Length: 112
View 1 (cartoon, rainbow, N blue to C red):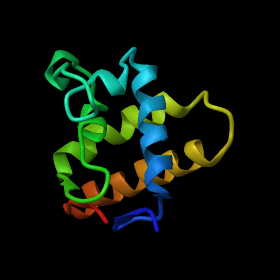
View 2: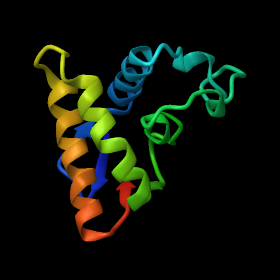
View 3: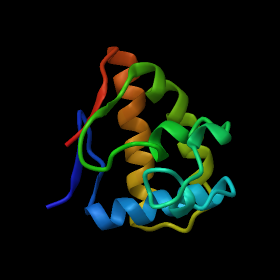
View 4: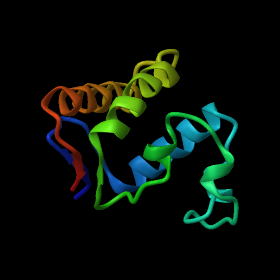
């Protein structure tokens, strides 16, 4: 059991997705565990980065809008471009491509 996206090809276990987002947060000098909703008290609005809609999101339901997908996809690619090849990098690229597909089709990306 894990996290999938509709439409989409990217997939993580829930714990893997949490670790992935912690890794992304570090890329923008954020400690995800210090953020509201992740055990801390810092509001995401303190940060101005296009990746925020992905970081400040439930890991088991909900969706990203077309506008959010359009914003997040290029930033996601940028943040993982220098990561070593591995599951997180490969799935992040798939997720970014899934988001770009959603933009093209004008549909939301559903977390399921």
